[in-house]
Length: 294
Ligand SMILES: [Mg+2]
Image (cartoon, helix red, strand yellow):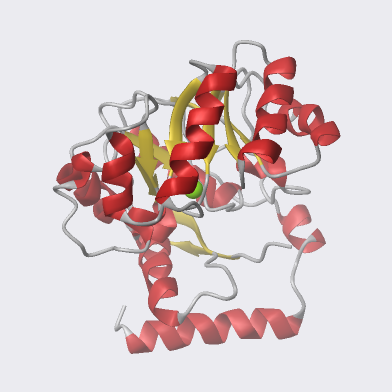
């Protein structure tokens, strides 16, 4: 189940959907992005469509083909992995379904440096050159720096950015090759560009499992980077039962188009939360609004 608050501002529709367990401080960053998305025109866009990757959660092997099928035309696949054995099964099945796939592993920072060295050695030995990058293999930035000098794969950072907003990212190149930027968790367009500028590394714009409204802003963010070398993780509506936009924001031929979107009100009605949940969200917005003077 995913809950999202959508609303309309002077520039169009926007989305506020921090995960339910997030504290107010973290959620306030999402609200900044949501308000900017609603009330500020998009920055200059360098392209009208964005190449996207498929996102494969940690599913049973027999479900892999079905999940990948929903990311039509995507040949880059991000796979959530926990360890070598279960991860290798998913990589193997992905390569059965898409033989020329470029693979990204997303570890969510869950490995120690020793685990990472061992598992990535095994992944490299078994699959060779199929990996585009490894996303957040370890949480610690020093561990990443140590790992970077040992492994043949590139390293991307996600949690290192998201959990350390406000830090100085100008030394990040010692620990990473690619920066994952997320529209709402990073705080919106201006905040995302500032982080990318500090890091000076290639960016990949990725979703936070938003509805099509949030995804439309993420696509605009991706399009607002002059240089975009990698497919972006924005096809994730495919992991939901439905979008609230019609047509749903899904990849076609591996690409998604960048345009302002509105909700479809029949779908909004169908997936509308209970009055109790709606009030919970209104309270959440009001509290954050007051506490941070947004
Ligand atoms: Mg990640």
